[in-house]
Length: 194
Ligand code: SF4
Image 1 (cartoon, rainbow, N blue to C red):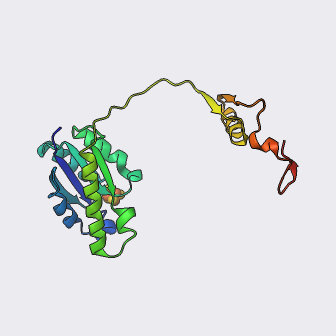
Image 2 (cartoon, rainbow, N blue to C red; image 1 turned 90 degrees about the vertical axis):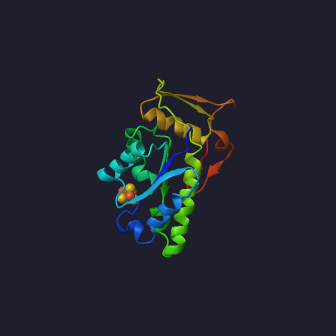
Image 3 (tube, helix red, strand yellow; image 1 turned 30 degrees about the vertical axis):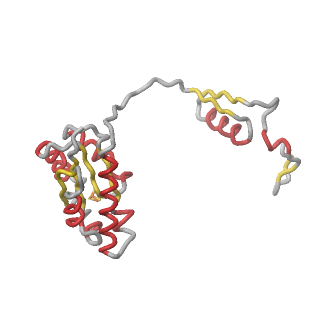
């Protein structure tokens, strides 16, 4: 596999750029072995930002992509789609969180920038080891097997049954109830445990 990583560093307006020197992060990223292209953009998740990623993949012949921006919970899906639209397997992509885990929690610009650089370096290292993955679907039987008939197992079985699914509860002992059945009364109600 070719080692042509593209690194895209997001400003998130002032959210990231007011604390992290994103230009410096991109500039240093461009010197990491395997990185063929690195740039910044004000709002990477916007349509023009995604278009920039797609265009760079084509024009720079990129094979892997790293985006340094916010939490993957927010935009991992967005960027996977953008990367796929550019012609790269969506799993040859890594996202680095330099907002929630960096600019939002640090005040020292130099140290926050250093942290962003370290995170980007780690993501580049990771993405170079990624392999293309394919999404597959498999048929499932909507039935559950709960192993262990203690209190947790019994409650889990009841919850699943109440959700409308068939459950099979398996217990190796002669009766269910687990440790609870060895108790006499339980605090604070003093109910009989059995
Ligand atoms: S990708 Fe994330 S960090 Fe960048 S502009 Fe969008 S929300 Fe902000």
